[in-house]
Length: 135
Image 1 (tube, rainbow, N blue to C red):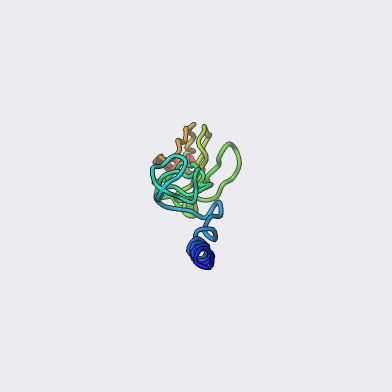
Image 2 (image 1 turned 135 degrees about the vertical axis):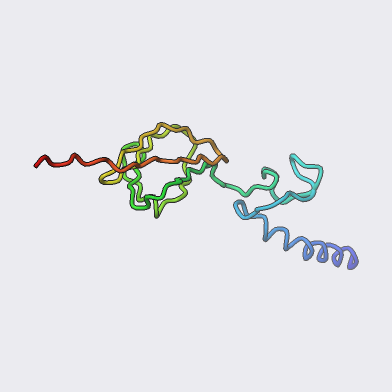
């Protein structure tokens, strides 16, 4: 009986670290061991291989322009300047993107952002020729 109690205590002590790390939302990385969808044991039976829990699926939009003070509008709402944004992470979907700068042409484009993909935008913000005054 004493030997059985000692084996039970040892097994309990060895499994304590596994129970402490079995919180949902903590695991990031490859799966290990036996689980629901894996031939190996793992403390997270519903995990995805190589991805953390709750990782949002977003796409990137990058602006490639030399006019850093140009204003960016997404679906009509101000998002910031090109110099501050450089790269934006957006949820998958369609967006109307406008880039405006005073004294320059306006860039308008309807884009579709796909999850895990990077969309490069090259807004051509040319200087608008000012009409010359007649003497």
